[in-house]
Image (cartoon, rainbow, N blue to C red; front, top):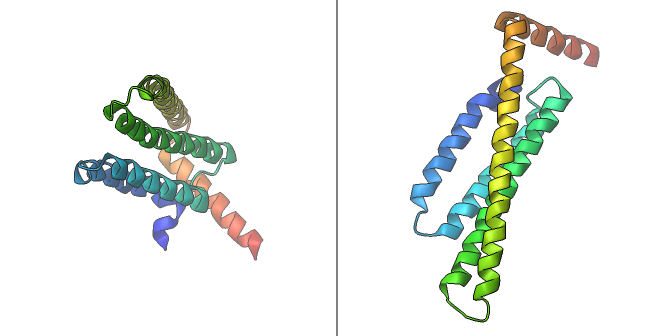
Length: 156
């Protein structure tokens, strides 16, 4: 079970990205299946984040959770848009105008979600860079170990 420990959080994030990238060409023929698999992978990532709490600071865990939830909502938006595309391609004159306007509005929502997600990660990257200038990796690891073992001793 050491895979779910906080120090492996970033390593497993690379596996998640690999699964996301690999599912796109595998399920290329069925666009609904692609979005559903992306949603399932993202739900598992959110569950893993909640189970591991990888960051010592509570605000960072909450911030990362919000970013992951934004990504989940984006994947749901992609799924809904794929159904709207099906409605548009049926070329039913009674529903065509509403489907096109829904697709347009939802596209802007998706754009805003991706933009917010990327800006949020840039902010997190900037915070990590500033923290890296203030402390060496060894100092941060020593502090994390000290706090971890102090909490273990206090829990007995």
